Amino acid sequence: MNVLATLNRPLPMPLPMPLPIQVSVPMSVTWTWCRFHDLRLDDLYDTLALRAAVFVVEQNCPYQDPDGVDRQCWHLLGRDAAGTLQAVLR
Image 1 (cartoon, rainbow, N blue to C red):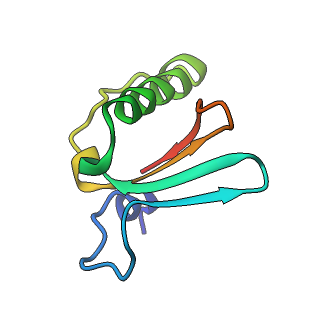
Image 2 (tube, rainbow, N blue to C red):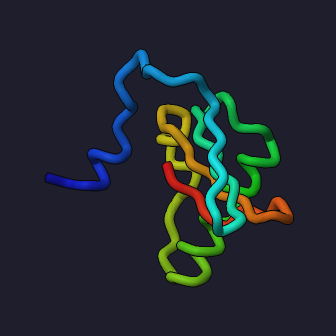
């Protein structure tokens, strides 16, 4: 089974939880789990910037981003105590 194809599929609806969900962990990272339409403009910008820094610059793996999948996905954002985006998952 292709794991990436599985992760990029929309989640079944309805989900049994209120959204967006925020969870804090001991590492001083605040996690926010939300749909695309719940992302603030700053969240979207920070997400695209972090993905470009990791994939295009650090891993030298240029790809077209956005790729049309973000609007259908859930997004998990991890921000440090200063509010800087440190992790993102879709």
